Length: 150
Image (tube, rainbow, N blue to C red; front, top):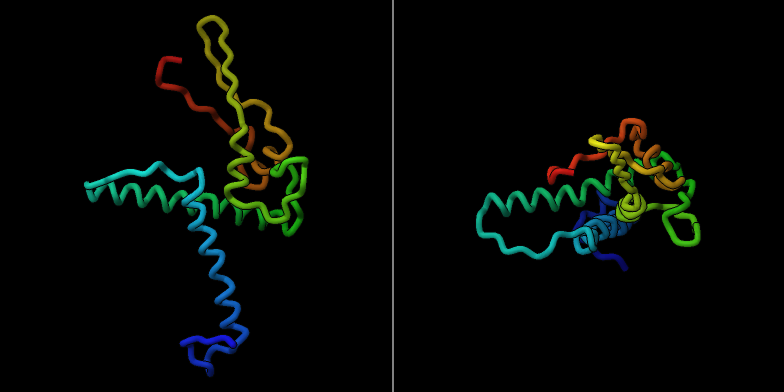
């Protein structure tokens, strides 16, 4: 038996059950705050810093969710290979797994005399696929310049 405070006339039982089952998606997003992407514990007293930290935490939830949505929308149910060990397919890639897949990108620093050039190393097939699915022009990817003199 399913109990709810929603009026039975306006909300059929099937819709109430669908609403209840969709709660897991919200709970899963909040689980991402507790994974290794989360910031270390901090004690903040200044309200501006608390607001800033909350803003960063919201972005931490939003960016992987948008990446996941874009990749799933582009794949249209087709599995993505290369995110799991042994090449197992990932029919529904998650935001954290996409970020983990991109985390293996490398920057190559080439020094020729006084000239220092930084470029992204050749991405593996899974990384190339993720970059393409996210709509990022791989030719426009730029690396950062370190400010410590390198």
